[in-house]
Length: 138
Image (cartoon, rainbow, N blue to C red):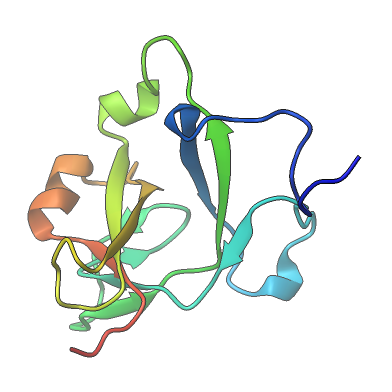
């Protein structure tokens, strides 16, 4: 039986698939259980926030960009019932990922759900304009 590498037995419709993201370690060598499906993304920079103790946090210096640890991205099937309780409670920020610092619909890649269980909720980070960038230069 032929197939594409990495293809699972079950076929999923794109309408039924959602991204699942998880911030992991800051170095690839520290990741203990490497997943066979999905992708590890590194080199993204947070604008207007920093990643500290598994959550978004206020910058402690007057810097605009802070590196994000390695991000694990995979696909999961959407739930058919009510949505994610954490996302509706405000403890998860739906952070946009842009190719360039110029924020337009042309350069958006996808969105990442980031923990914000510290001092501020998701509305605070949205008003601050926090985003992930592949390239920090205009």
